Image (cartoon, rainbow, N blue to C red; front, side):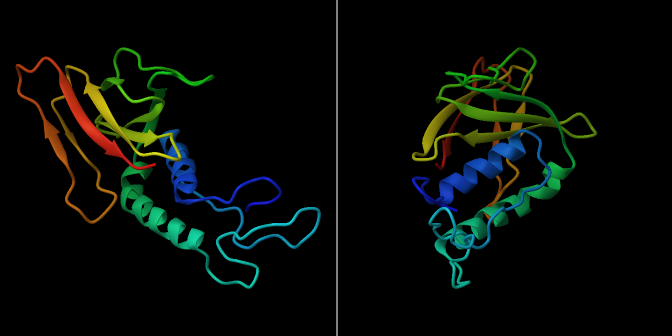
Length: 179
């Protein structure tokens, strides 16, 4: 809810907050404000609903992100978090990539990577663009022992699959991320 000099949330704000939480191992999401608070010390803007109780654009943005999360949710619920890393420059309090991870590097600034495993020992990665104003193209370099990558689709499109020939020394993928 915007108030004072705090700006109104937009689609990319919600996207970053929810996906960053999931990358850190959260198992659910919750919205704090559905309606603007009653006037008081501050003048408040609209939330998911306005003061008349009507849905706002933010509501429909949240609906679309919730739909994505509901598609990947069953997979996420079955995983446990093993690491959280950032591409360079690593923000204060963050950690860069280290040996033993499925990803060696990402050549786009401050991409967030949550690493997970399932009960069978299979690795999963949730990549998050931490930029709220711009999408980005990132070159992701995978470790030598990664044979292939299969996307857990967050929409109705068929999942992407990447694989490399045995003799390829660099296992790179160029990926596009929304703000």
